[in-house]
Amino acid sequence: MNETYSAFAGFAQTWGLLYFMLLFAVVLAYALWPKNRKKFDDAAQIPFRED
Image 1 (cartoon, rainbow, N blue to C red):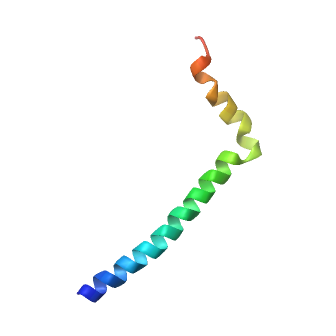
Image 2 (image 1 turned 90 degrees about the horizontal axis):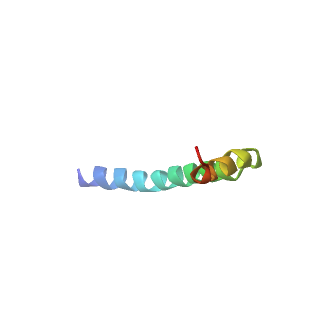
């Protein structure tokens, strides 16, 4: 049973790290994509608007 846990833990650590690195790269690319700049600039100004 201990071998099964160790194998599963090793698998989860390796592939989990790769999964989250890929997810981070996708989110970063979305945030820095030039097409989205206007949307984010507009959202950044929301607190300064008077209703």
